[in-house]
Length: 68
Image 1 (cartoon, rainbow, N blue to C red):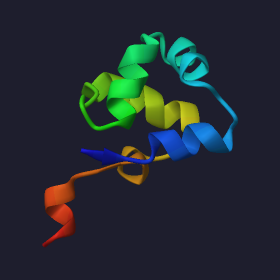
Image 2 (image 1 turned 180 degrees about the vertical axis):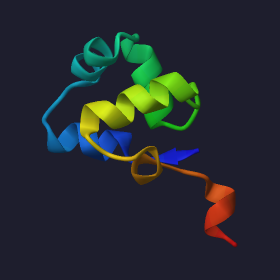
Image 3 (image 1 turned 90 degrees about the vertical axis):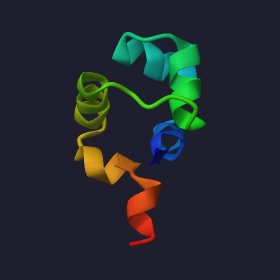
Image 4 (image 1 turned 45 degrees about the vertical axis):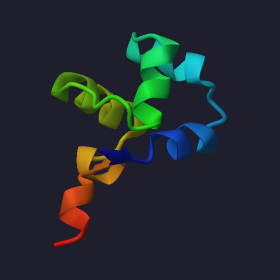
């Protein structure tokens, strides 16, 4: 799943550790989500969206839907 997490985090000058602390996950989890190696659970995706004040769809995109 593609996402804008790295860009959104950088716009706020947050480190991966800062974001991880806010989300109550490990820095490694944030890195894995940003690089697309791990898709967050639905509750975590909602938590991320709430933290950035955005809709989930504005942060995460399904690459297979982009080609339709």
